[in-house]
Image (tube, rainbow, N blue to C red; front, side, top):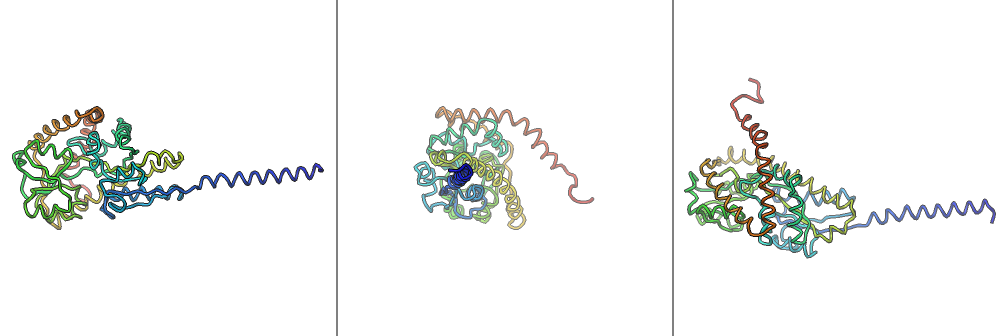
Length: 368
């Protein structure tokens, strides 16, 4: 074979090899993965469904369709409170819910749920990212067979709706209220009777007097459910639930099987959803509260300081008792308390001091 022909043949072979190499890599990269995610919320639940919808859409779009997440509403594949088990068992790759739903599975989950008189939403996010919370949450959820991501936060919730005024801690004696979680234990400690009741039964129970009060989330969700039509007084502050993580949990095997770039997309989707949901809650709660007061004449009430101090003391006893049940619960609670003690002085001179200054009587926003 002549040298010129050999060179031409070699160049052709190299071109073929290069072409094959260029074709093979995209073929591997474009492998399609399909996941199913079910949320514990009904479709179109105000703000609560935003996190799940955002995560599913973000992952699908950011991955260019390499990882497609199909979203299902509560009950479409598994009963709402069985979503965690279904994800852990591989019947779903992802779920979206609320940590208090999983407390019955693991006591330590109480401290990833709202903690009475605990951290604000911003403080909790700071604890999670820079105070050891992320690692501890990972330990908790790993025991349930899933990987956890924060995927929204309710921000501070209202205390509840009542048809009688709460004038002192004595008003809680014999009070029947729909409330769960650690807050229900605090109510019991001050002489009230917490009632476990599906939200759908609340209207009739309030109207009949079977319960004296009920909590849900905050103004936008409470108004959507019609609680402002069923009770006269809307009590604050939300000492029971100063913040509330929404959780996205992923089957560990499914997550570990992803290439690194898709893992980062799953993580990024939840970080984005976490911020988006908080902002949506603040904006829409403000509008809903204004509508409640101006259009529906809802009476906003604040618990007095003496009542809050009594509830705070009872809360201290309750959360310490729950934290003493096992080592993981104690580790979580101690971490939260350590961060709480560190962050409160800063919050007091920054956020709280500014808010007090903003409330002083001076014109602002209009020409005088």
